[in-house]
Each structure stands twice: as C-alpha cells, then as structure tokens.
Length: 75
Image (cartoon, rainbow, N blue to C red; front, top):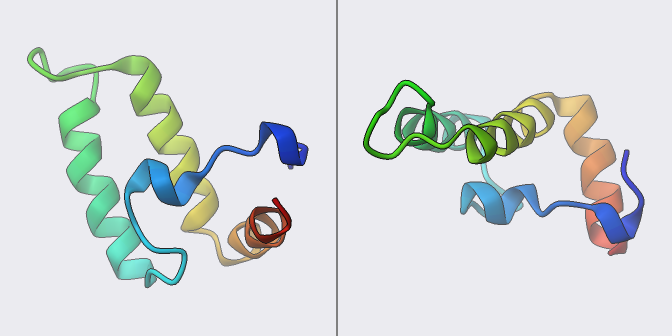
C-alpha cells in the first residue's frame, strides 16, 4: 500500500461513497470505463483509465479494500 501522503482517493475517483456496495462500485466502474477507455475516440484517456482500473481493482477485492480503508481513514 502507498504511504499516507501518496494515497489516492479511490472513492473520489469513482465518485462513490466509502460505504458503497460492491454492485454500485461495479456499475460506476463500467460507466466510467466505457467513457475513458482508450478505444473511445471522443472521451478516451489512457492515464485516467489506468487510475480507474487501479481503483476498481482495489475496491472490488474485499481484502484489498479493507487494507485500503484502514489507510484511507488514517489519512
């Protein structure tokens, strides 16, 4: 996990509550992924897409999300 000063706010990135259910996380991720995917010629953005993917990878895994939440609340 990154140090506190390096911690990216994945909840803000996905524009969801820290209490969001897994289904909500998945639904919001899919919406943003379609918009930011590099294949989308109008709104694609590879850098933002990678950040989005990283946020989803952490928040969709219960164990990794628990570790992230500890660091998030300490920040």
